[in-house]
Length: 348
Image 1 (cartoon, rainbow, N blue to C red):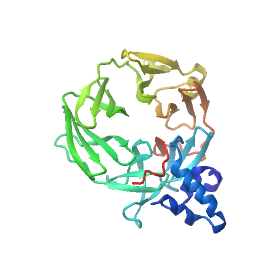
Image 2: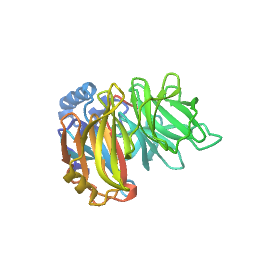
Image 3: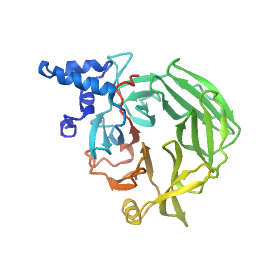
Image 4: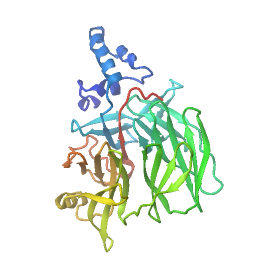
């Protein structure tokens, strides 16, 4: 089934169809002698790739085939990714991703049975188990963000009770450590983005924008008003914070807008989703939507629906995605919902 969706000439087809990779030059072993020269060229291309490829891994079959469907907006097509991965430290060990929690760059933090977590590179098909978080005396901590630093990665976790408690995992030490406390109470944390050494986090109940400095582990409040929006999501585009959300009237969503935070710390409207696209996406009964973004491309989805709409912030173009090859898997458990930048040099 996979061969129907992988292009033989595409750079990442070689990587995805190969067994787990611990070194890019192992690609030679998966081709015949007559193809060695071509394989050498592909290995060199992969090592030098400018890392502009992008895949929106939106849907998954976690039960029967353990595969996910990933959309490439440049080529306007889907590929299938295996969700059965090999351990980088124990080659004979395999894990099957059960749910995707957070992601950044090439890495996905995922659940793997018994409450354990793994960090996975879906394109090299390897993973690393990370130790349990430091227990909290109040509320169980949960992962807020993973930050792909290419040579290493960090995971930020929070416990949200009478105040915000935080801890950080560093892949270089393979340990968690307690970091700063923010003396404020929120109903929940929403989306977050990493920019210039700071993690910016959107909170709900009340709506605030917090900053977390990685080097010090300290929290701060960003002095900016957050508009009252439904399904609000914080994004990053060309080193500017972007906000996506729905405008409601009497509890009914009427429009979806995109705003950018300017130098004066005001949200400048970029655009609204065109009415005809909004109506089609919502099927006339719009109460909730999901946003997946990366590199200025924003994917709008609704769980339980096969319709996926994308907007390019730079090109100012809207388009519908072609049908997903996992047709029919639109249940609550089929959602993956992450954008990944495939990199062969990010080996966990």
